[in-house]
Image: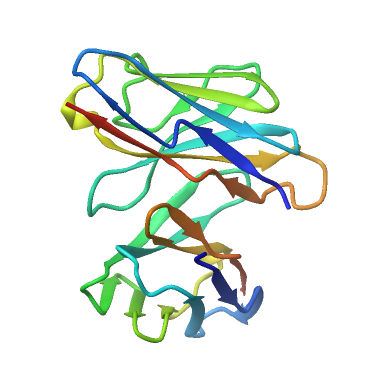
Length: 119
Length: 109
C-alpha cells in the first residue's frame, strides 16, 4: 500500500527558532498534500492544502507567514514553523492523495506525525 | 501494532434513515478516538473527539460512543440527509495516529 513518511518524528527546539518538517510519499506521486495539527486534548484540525507547484491554501485562522508550506515535487511537501513559540507545540501530521485520475484518487494516506515541543 | 478497522466499507441508505458506522481497534491503550468526514479532494473535517476517559460525545445529529475495553466505537447519524454523503474515518491516537479504513456513505434523496 501507499506509504507516507514524515521527518523528524519528534523535535524539541528553543523559542524563536524555525523548524522544518518533511512529508514524503514513498511509493506514489501525490498532487495534493494536507497538513494537520492537533493540540493536546483537541481534535485534529486541517491547517492547509498543498498542491504541487502552486501556493498552499490555508484554513481560516492559520497564519501563512508563520507556517510556510512548500510542495516542490510530487513526492515532497515541507512545513516550516517560523519563529516557533511554546504555543506552537503540537502534533503535526500530513497526508497525501494519489495522483488525480487514477483509482482511489481521493484516498488520503497519512504520515505518522511529528511531535513538536517548543521550550 | 494498532490496527483500526471500519465496517462497512460502503453504505447506501435512503434519506431520513438513521444509521450506524462501526470502528474497531486492536490496542485499547489510546489517548482518544476521533471521527472525521472526508469530502472528495478535501482535507478531513473533525466531527467528534472522545477522550479515553469518556464514553460518548454528541454534536447535532451525530453521536459517537467509545468502549475501550472491547476496542469499539460507533458513529450514529440520525435522520440522514444527502449532504451527509461522504467518507467517514475514525482514528485513534496512541504514540501516533492510526486511521481506519473508512466508510463511504451515500444518502439517496
